[in-house]
Image (cartoon, rainbow, N blue to C red):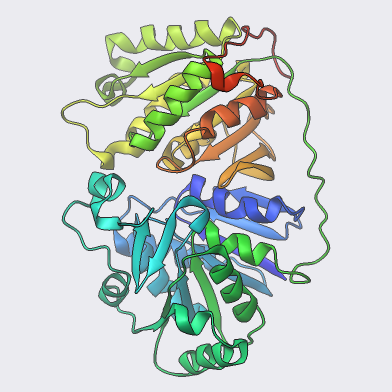
Length: 429
């Protein structure tokens, strides 16, 4: 089997696809479905539709699907906290791909589904900081969101999911043959998602998966589903050169991750306010910020670069701010030995600015945090890249990513206090 993953942002595409790469499958994440992905067994496409209108997002998603090769199965990756135009995209795909098996749960990261409602560490999604930041006063009910997008829904309860396998299979078959177009699946554990993967992967009825990285991990682990692994999962040892950490997310999760990174790695931090990025290169302060970034990287110093927030900040301008930040970094990117990008818009903007269109994924730093290397770039320069969704991961995620790119083992006494590493010199080839 070969698999096409369609995601609405880059970090989402990577955190879903890394489950397959970690098991040795040849896995590629690409910014454009027209790029040559070779003989990859798993291809994850970032359609960059999260900030588009629902109709534009649906059209772009269908266009990506229509480029799929014969024999590929479809996994529509959605955000585990339901951000973006996911329901409209699923509705558009359903007409072409059959019954949508909707299971957004990712128990390893605290996301579960109970009675069709998404919970984050047991808290209703609507009450979380992540939801309020972008969707204040909007409904987060799976059934309502799908029905609003025009789909007829059915529900799969935990009792049925955990019951007899034959009964479960027949239940899903009957739904697929009926008039329902989307099956909403409750799941509270990885074992629940594994049972769903085992049953649906064997079915010949027309269906496709809709989920986060949680269900993807269980599909990846199914025996004999894919051809024999062909990827060499080893990775090159990093030479001494600066690591650039870009954080476009303003979530509390990202704040905690940055605090730990600074405390333990002793990394320098620069925070650029949106006003500078909105005005662009013509703004007087732009050249000074660009100079500071370049000077730090030229000295071989690792750098944490963040987008700040002001009174007029709007989450909808994330792509614009990320593009400006990438333009500011671009003249100095050849000095970077490794890139860590938090937030799909931030990662896509930086890779696009330097002509990196696809990443071959190699391993997972922690759940949903993906490491890969560019297949090609405009200037032939291909540093290691780690991507992570903004409001995602443990407090340790950025520090663990920094350790990985630095090829450093975490010190045994790290819990006793801050650990500072010497500045690195030199340039990675």
